[in-house]
Each structure stands twice: as C-alpha cells, then as structure tokens.
Length: 106
Image 1 (cartoon, rainbow, N blue to C red):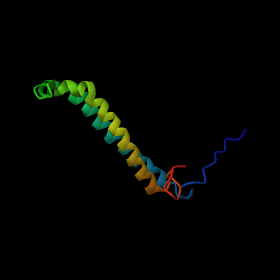
Image 2: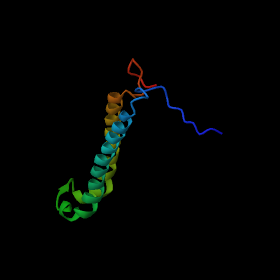
Image 3: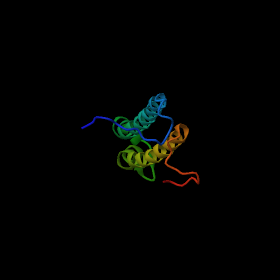
Image 4: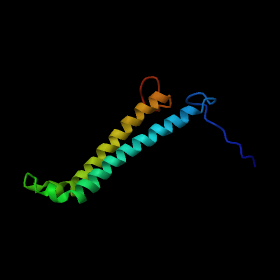
C-alpha cells in the first residue's frame, strides 16, 4: 500500500501552504476567546462571584442563581452563533467558504 496523501483541489493554491497555518492560528484564536468568555460566565459568575451577584435581584430572583441555572446555557448558545458567524467570515477571507456564488450553502 502507498502512503501517498492527496490534497483537495478546492481552496487556495496548494503551493502556498502558509495560508493553512494562518487560517488555523485564527481558528484557535477564535476558540480561545470564546471559551474564555464561556469559562468566565459559567465558572466565574456562577461559582466564584455568586455571593456578590446574589445581592442583586431581578424579578425576585438572585442574579448569581440565574447565572448558575440559565445564564451559562444562554451564553453557550449565543457563543455557538458567534462562532459560526465569525468562522464564516474567516472562511470567506481565506477562500474556503462553503457557499456558492449565489451565497447559498453547498
């Protein structure tokens, strides 16, 4: 058997592989930023800062409890949307978008 790997013909030219490193670096940067936000909301606001936040009440519920029960979930869903939109923009920048010429997904 041959250990030859074939590269895809879609995307930027194969001779310039530095775009892959830049693309991956941007992808990792997006992930780190969004995971840091999620960690701060889910761990910081729900566990570490729960006592000060519980002094604030909204509609009769302590804010720290709300972040522990609902806020981290809402934040996670919003971060998924932000990731998808951010990566679409990066994909467009590097020419590896999954949309065709009419703007529809393939």
